[in-house]
Length: 409
Image (tube, rainbow, N blue to C red; front, side):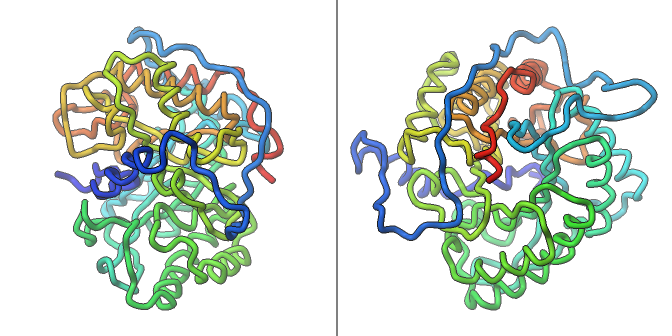
């Protein structure tokens, strides 16, 4: 199995899933509430009005992302993102091949930019791996598939020139952590101070690139459950903010988000959202929306204008609603499952007045206009699946105006 096809942002131990899914049996059916005396992070959840809903996913008759965005080779988003607007985006995951030329890298970025403008996306998050020696390692480092800061600059420039809102999102590769029992959410460095020192050293050139290219957001951590709340983040984020003047963010795993307060000294919180819902494959959009709200209501029943879905996705296969982030299983392909899920998630984003959604995912080395090979590709791939693309475009062209100023405060 190619490591490049692992959903690096979604894999966590079955024991975690069991505990979280079992939570309602322990705490009852009431939403989880937080004591007023608990420690507050910089993130504050606000309230605002409810939004509108998108259209249904439709049929297989068109592939909206495959059309050219404009004539003459120019690639431009239909409408540039501005503060207060929804972030309609995609996670582009990049494992670099050092043998590929700079020209290939730039052309590949242009290929993705063209595809995403066809979907009416206004945002792109560029995720790429970094490495550690194991669960107790103090060392963070680049690896054979980590793109250099110079190469990230070239790709970022393509997306920036096309008018996309851009995010840089380094993410810990899990190959050395013995998955699925070991994952980025349960690392325990022998020396946390040494770990933070090493991590900042790794992040520094990418923070400098983010500043030079005016990236909108830099994600300093993703799904690092066991490290959340550590005092080391205060120093790391403070030093990061001296290098980079944009939005510093953290992306929490869905289980931790609903079960606990995310105490991180950042100014934006994303959620990698793979809520399992025990419904059949023919469940309606509204049934899935209800399932999502059951999970979100454990955190709060209010609107969520300061929360962005940093990742949302699901396998295009039978039974996927029960475990949306399951990469390892390859059951019978079912594009309608994926399309209906996308439509439901978009409806939740609008009704809860969230900041937006980034779909997982597109792999940088792939041609997004080519249908996935269902023998080898991840079921979570959506590029080249007409029903899913139609659902995404319907979402991205809906009349949802966005969460307003609250989303950027």
